[in-house]
Length: 115
Length: 176
Image (cartoon, rainbow over all chains, first blue to last red; front, side):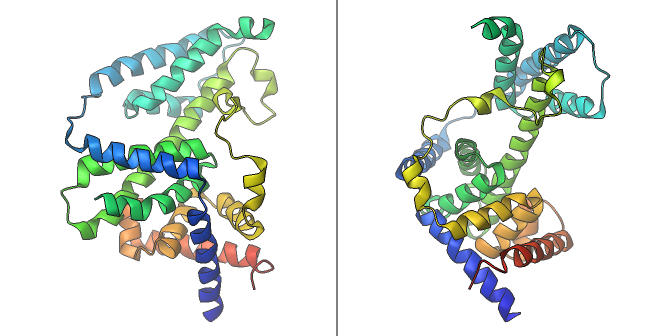
């Protein structure tokens, strides 16, 4: 038991040091995030469900497009179904921003290969 | 509220960084968690803040994993990607250079012992890793950790015990 306590104490010290030694740029970004959170405390949140639903539909369409126009369309695996469920749940607006990038990438593959 | 956030932000950031392995993503996780926490829970009694804050951090980390999974599927569907499937899927977003990455000099300053610990923690299953950090580092009780992780107290005890065993096994030659 005392060996376990010693180990945990050792781990805590290392982790504490790592938290203290955070680079100045990262610490500044954390401070910025904190002040932004405190500033926006009273602001009303923009309802996200409707834009998210629209984006979810667009993302599902992109996924369907990408699967349809592949040289050899793959089977819909359990993993694909899970992804469709995540998209359809419309829980995370951030996700759809990423999907726009992938849609752009899919469209510009040939251009990128040439460049 | 500001004092509370100041008191937890660095540890929460490190936890997110250990979970994601990507500094910028960890910062995003923390930023979103702070915003959500202040909006939703600022009115709650102060003694509830810590488990509530970490509950949000855990939700953000879980969302990050889900987003990554969706990205990987999309990347696997890109034309010409099928042939490379034996290799681990590369995420084009992650291939972009990080303009704020720490320079090699800063990197070498990080202690070898911490790097070893960080590697072992990153190899733990996510829930074991986060339960261990919340219990052993942040000092949350079993009940608070269960609330933060959204699981039972029994599950917390199991995850904690497994994580501790792995750390004992892997760190036995690396600590005094």
